[in-house]
Image (tube, rainbow, N blue to C red; front, side, top):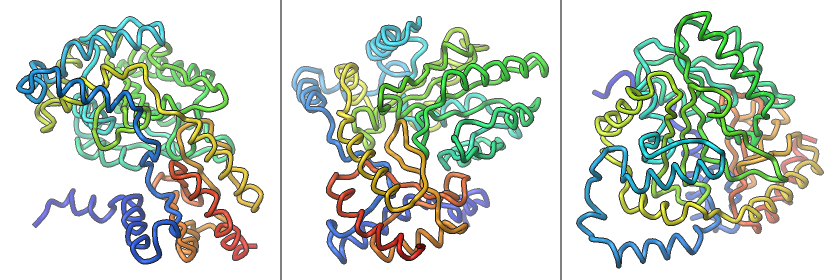
Amino acid sequence: MISKKMENMVANSSAIRAMFEEGNRLAGIYGAENVYDFSLGNPNVPAPETVKDAIRELLNEEDPVVLHGYTNSNAGYEDVRTAVAESLNAKFGTDFSAKNITMTVGAAGGLNVILKSLLNPGDEVIAFAPYFGEYRSYTNNYDGVLVEISPDTETFQPKLDEFEAKITAKTKAVIVNTPNNPTGVVYSEETIKKMAAIMEAKQKEFGTDIYLISDEPYRELAYDGVEVPYLTKYYANTVVGYSYSKSLSLPGERIGYLVIPNEAADSEKLIGAANVATRILGFVNAPTLQQKVVKKCLNEKTDISYYNRNRETLYHGLKELGFECIKPEGAFYLFVKSPVADEKEFCAAAKKYNILIVPGTSFACPGYVRLAYCVSYETIVNSLPKFAELAKEYK
């Protein structure tokens, strides 16, 4: 008999994954070119050629026993962590060193490591809806309590008045995700400054440490010159989680890092805890080959012009058909208002046209649906006549 906690998790398993699997099933019946699968944020832009070159060089040049062995520290190779720190310092004017970097098994692994390091049973973690649904599972993994801030469906910026009211003496962490999944919104510098001020005041009020966890897998995917604030500059108790899944199109390689600045409360203990958590959660260390690969590719980026063309085409195409949505500033998602209150009904209707979209309830925001436009341009173009047929159903 499986655990009660797992029973609940299985019962509420990812609708995104279920839809993705349904897309594969439909592709087998109708052909992949006739299925318009917007379910999963799986990059369709290939990794830069330098990634392939780096892998070849490493396999030819490095001692295979060392390259494929355990790292001396659970935090990862010191030369890799030094290179990551120096790259961040050059980009953001920070002052990190290798000790501030823990290499992780993607952003998800990093979030689990930092939550394991921070949470006692009953501690509260705040997330701003709409948010990536796995935050609830990650918090639940360590017997924490996820506290939701309801969405502002006009701007999808955080509701700071509600945020301030819901911080309690039990609040241990706040998770922000910008550029945001599922909306594509970038939290403005003004928003971040106000959020930081609220958290500083609440720390003083309760005599506690409240950590801001910045989940940043989409940092490099920002359009039209939009700046994404680097949050350690605004709030001392910030921990940054990053992934190369999107910036280098390496989602399956599971490689990322945590930044724990010296300025964070109990930073030495927290850094030590993150290293131990990496081991005891079963990760042991981040994938060694991929650590070395990203060191060689720190200045490389995915060509986001592909995503931008998809963004423009899909956004304007749906708007012309009468659908309501805000234009995303980053990431590769479009968050569309359902024409009916029950967005699951709308998702079911879309499937009749082989259009696969994800209900907003997966992101704690019912009444909306998410479309991942990290698909081929042809999929975008060919889907629009089907969206037109769908729109006719709802007039």
